[in-house]
Length: 213
Length: 349
Image 1 (cartoon, each protein chain N blue to C red):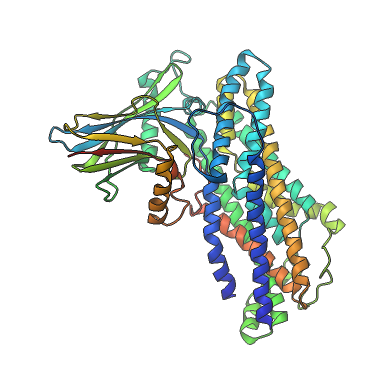
Image 2: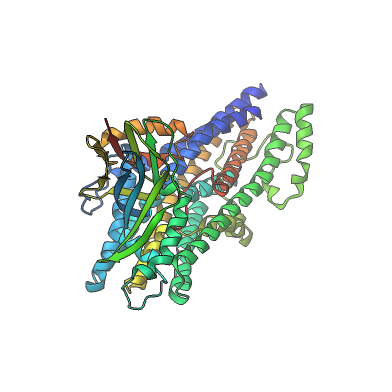
C-alpha cells in the first residue's frame, strides 16, 4: 500500500505537467508600457496600454448599452474598465518587477485607468504605482500570464518607453520568441515556485530591463 | 512472494500510464507532420518541443477563426474555411493533455470498459460540451443580452460545478474499486493487518457497482483472455447510465474558446456560423479524445495479458490498476476543484 502511495506521489508531477500543457491562450494582448520615473531618478510605476484581440473585445463589449450602436465612449466603457482593473488584481496585473535581481516588488491598485475603443480596437490604459518607489542599478520588468490564458506580445513599434528616467539609463527588452530568454527563464522560474504548472507561462514572458549607472 | 507480485502490479500500472503518456506524445508528433494550411504569423513563438509547436498551431487556428468569421460576412464561401479551421482547432485543442481526456480514459480503465464505449463516451461528452456552450451564449448573450461579466460568472459557476462532479465521480469510483482491490489483496495475502483494512471497507460489498468483484477468489475466469464486452453491459440501459456520469462530468464545462467564438459570431451577426463552428470543433475534439481513450483501453489489455502470465496474480494486478485509475479521477477532480491543477481556467476581466 505504501509503495502504491509512493508511486502515486511520483506520478503527481506528471499530472501537473499535463495541466500545464493544456493551458493555451484565449486572449491576446498587444502591450505598450511606459516606465515612470520621479525627478530623483527612482521608478514610481508602470503605465500600461493593453489592446485586446478582436474576439476577446467582442466578448468584453457584449451586452454593454451604448447611445450609438458600435460606438463606445469612455464613459460607457467605465464600468467595464472597473471590472477589468478589479479582476486583474487577482493576477497581480501580470506585471512582475524586480530590482537588482531581488524579490518581486509590490504594486498598489491601478490609477488613471480607462478603456477606449477606436477603429474596432479595445485598449485598456492603466497606471500601476509601485508601493515604494525604487532605485536600482538593474531593473527587470516582466509582463506575462503564468498560466498562459493570456498571451502578451509587445507592440511592434516602440513598445517600451522610459518617462523621465535619469540620463545614462539603458533600456532593453526581450520578446518571448527570442530563444535566449527561454532556457534561462525555465530554470529560474520553474524551481522558484515549485512546479512547472504555475510558471508555465513564464516561457512566454516579455522581459524589459533597465540598467542605470 | 506476494510482495514480488505486488511490485509487478505496480509496474504494470506504471506501464499503462507511461504508455498513455507516450501515446499522447506520439500523436503530437504525428500531427506535427501534418501540413495543415494557413499562413504563419510573422512572430511565431520559438518555444521548443511538441508542446510549443502545438500551442503555436492552436493559436494560429484560433486566431484565424475570428478573421474567417469576419470574411464570411461578405463572402459566404468563407464559412467552409471556418469549418475546416474549427475542426483542426478542435483536434489540436484536445491533443494537449487535458483533463477531459484524462477523466474519460481513467474511467474506462477503472471500469472494465471497451474501446467502443470509449469512443461513444468521447463523442457524447464533446457533443455535450458544444451544446452547453451554444446554450450559454444563446440564452445569456442573445436572449438576455447579458454582459460579459454576468456570462463569465455563469461560466465560472459551471466550471466549479463540473470539477466538483469529477471529484464526486472519482470518489465513487475509488470507493467501489478500492473495495475490490482490497478484497483481491486480502485473498492473495491474508495477513491480520490487511484483514483489518479489508474489514474496514466491508461496506463496499453490497454496492450495486461491485458486480465485477470476484469476492475472495484469486482466480479470475477472464485471466489470460481479453475481457470482451458483455452484451448486457453494452446494450443495456444500465450500462449506458453508468457512462452518463463520465459524460456529464466532462461535458458540463464548456470550452472558453467556443464561448468566445460564439459571442464574436453573434456580434458579427453570424451566430449560426459560430454555432456550426462550435459543433465542428466538438467533432475534432471527440476524435482526439476517442483516440486517447482507445489507447488507454488497449494499454490496459496489454497489462492484463502481461500480468496474467504470472502465477495467479492477474486479478490483484488488474484490481490494482483499476483502483489506481479511479484514484486518478479523484485526484484530477479535486486538483481542479481546489486549483492545484491550473487547467485552462475561465478568466473574467
